[in-house]
Image (cartoon, rainbow over the protein chains, first blue to last red):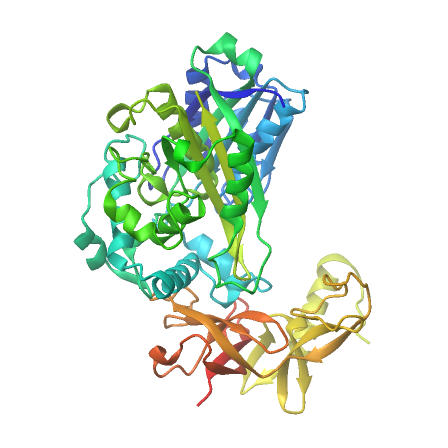
Length: 388
Length: 161
């Protein structure tokens, strides 16, 4: 297999920007990545854009092409990819595969999502898209709140996980985000703040949930040989794994095996175990999500996710800091932009560029993204492992 | 036979007018099914239907032509689904995300023939009774109105007494 490294990453600050469009965000984030890599727009040979397309302002098609035009990238192969919340993880993996093929040396993976509009701060078009999907469970009420309310119910019943432990994830990720200038929410919160915030679903309050906001992220990859021409700190891709759900009905809805299956592939490919990780960015659409991720990724045993966050082990300073960028919960979750934003955070950690939230001596990092759900299973899972 | 004269805008207007005339009227309201393929109409009303593979017996919802258990194609029969099932787990959203005028409650329900359905719940007096294994039965009723003014009919489950 060919050596592939990340040579640049760029974001725009995630947030609520009713008056700011996708093109503006793209121009900022993608240019930041190009500058970070020291790469000219004309050096990019292939590009993948991850987006769900919640916003209609660019039309339903060619979002990637329109965004790349803002930074002067045209003519090359440009493709849009979608796997719900992991859309820019697909963009990254496809870029990695493109370089693996030997056909390309430099690729650009990026993602964008615009979830606010001038009329409303909230993602109501997303709500309308889901409830009008007559042949999909969204039309019968399957919203993310329901998915994670089910997950929390089942986890509480099986392992005695508490709402307080789930809230600790929210508090930890907000603490990390307070040190991340790109995060949507940076003001620290307490467990009481979470437990007293507005109920939005059974067992779930507003602060247990990530914000649907706006954002764009971009990552530039290069083959090992080419990477050395651009940077003295290439961040090597030690593993890339992607799996899809199988809609099993022999397990509780959404406590599925997608993350475990992806983790097995990724750890084997990288030749490491979870104990070798220095830092991780995992999918925390809701706080209970992160607790389940700990168990699925082998950070602790089955059912021990609640006690793990309670111990402080996954907070900055602990044995395995998780979501130093703030996670989906506090950095924000513009669907298409999350995958590459997680990779940008790990890139900065492994290069020693994470400022106040730096994990000392970070050399091995992991990103984990989930995408969508239906028929009781997660749609897909991506895991990438990075090494300096 | 619906005759459509002309082409373009005129033809489409004619088709829409003919559709309105033939609409099912339910107490003066126009209704439509959330998806035609989920249901069959019987003298007792709408029932949920699925496909049963005649080669291996596996049942699918919604209907389909290829059995993904034994990969036999076009050997399915349409079967009514069991009217009763059991709750796997349930959840509720506190906001009016479905545009119903009230928050919704829903669950995954297992039917005896091995089909697991995601569904809205209705007539829930006491949600603490909705534990895993609770027996529920199918109901077909309206739930929201679409932008064309049609009341949409959908399947739901209600707790058995």
